[in-house]
Image (cartoon, rainbow, N blue to C red):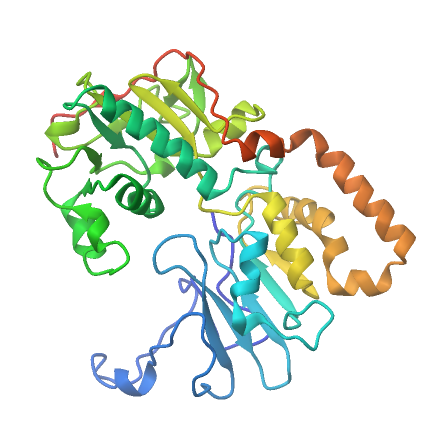
Length: 386
């Protein structure tokens, strides 16, 4: 989980994402008044607007989920800070962020003094993760093949509360199918032009469903017992699904597809993007950067210093040190202090340490999917909506 305090070092009156430890004061005694004077709606990926003195703030698409944003702060003294939040940006995508571009620098990007970055998957088992497009290709294969077998067949996407929106859009754009979602989510998606056409409130007309409710991905501790996921380390209970009646997983016309990362990371198998077990499939799918993509981010932006935002609660300091031990050679400050020979040795050491952890590029390019026969995951179906 995020360990970011909410406060950036460069400015003591700016807080981001975390506001639990500060006393907020209303702009006026009547809290519902005065908002027009306090708040300004800023465009995304644009910096050609009147600056909010004394700090210029630019929001950048984080490509994590709809509405997710990175925040670029540009201060009067010339310092710049970038807060990524949760993000998934590939190396080639960075060059489309024009507010970050500066052709006068050696890197071609603005000099970032401080980078606060998403370190969710800066771990051994997630050194490299298939791109979203590669995972989507496998996902569409699992969906289309199942639906083609029988006109009565349906697919249930069993995911977290949010994060499957890119899958919804792919189903709509490539298969022409809308996805049935729960009413509360439909009210949100229907207001977003990019996703309004991808979803439907009508369960009867949909062959693809993502209408599970009442389950939190945080309940899973990913302990394996005969390929089953145990909900708690202390209670041997299986995760519950609360879908609509038309796509209950105990119906043999329903194929459940479970997008996740941690399950695959714990198995530590190479070149596997998905598992197909007829009625239950698993898909390696992530909306967070892999460690390798974080390395690409550092190589491109060359920040002067950096702080990971997601750390293990019990070993936060040690975890942060381990992450930065591998990334510090890409800091701009380290680049100036380290002679070329030392830098080359450090890079070789990093690559040697990671070489056995990367998924092969050949396999990923071919969108390979390992269709192993596994013992079926046990899912508990709840009839009681309460």
